[in-house]
Length: 350
Image (cartoon, rainbow, N blue to C red):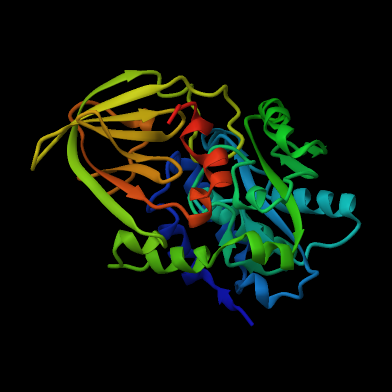
């Protein structure tokens, strides 16, 4: 049953988690990696949801808020365990496994830290298959699982239990995260292993560990496919790119960003004029006015210089990038999936 994520496996997971990650601040990413190394011990067992007894209580664990704030206000180290224990007290039963909300950069490491601290397995999968900005934008929600009750542990000892209707979690969570310093660890989406197996995007932890191996192509981190739209050079950046928010982190503590546009010129071929529309993340790509990609697929700019993801707020004229589109899990292209994570969810009337 399962296999062990040992220190070598942690290094591969951390590398793979950055392949398409946006909003990852270098200081907070390194902090999370050191944190994981300090608690990993001999390793954490990685299991499929269907390998657990169907009634095993599973809990999703995630960083919420700003990764920049995490780098500035250091954790005490017990936040993941405190959040899960608080949720256990509310539920009246122990958690038998931990699962990720999404697996981008720091959020691939926080569930592993929780599993190591609690001495329970980590489930091989997550609740998005990519990154969405809101806690409620998950395949767990699409499967009828509520994020609440939700327990939140802050870096200065705060502990908050949130109970509300599923659709109000985000609006109530934002001011709480701000009040505890801009970041916290959340334990949420309590469900059984049987429920989790039904709503999970499966085997994404294994996938990222494979993608983190030296020499493995970037496409290995995209289970449903990836395509390169074009290579292009940024000509201008128009409008707001966000109020210092981290698009990779659920429960953004800032107000939603104003729309922004990045205008590029294709470097070769037809030399089309490309426009990327962003609203916390890139939500729409147009080439010579024609739509060529939209959410729920993930649209990324990859620097041709160093191969790293270029965040919207780091885009600047003169930078050459490959524009890549990572296909979302099929559930995101259903009617319910598009309503939760498609263009209209980001204010685009498409």
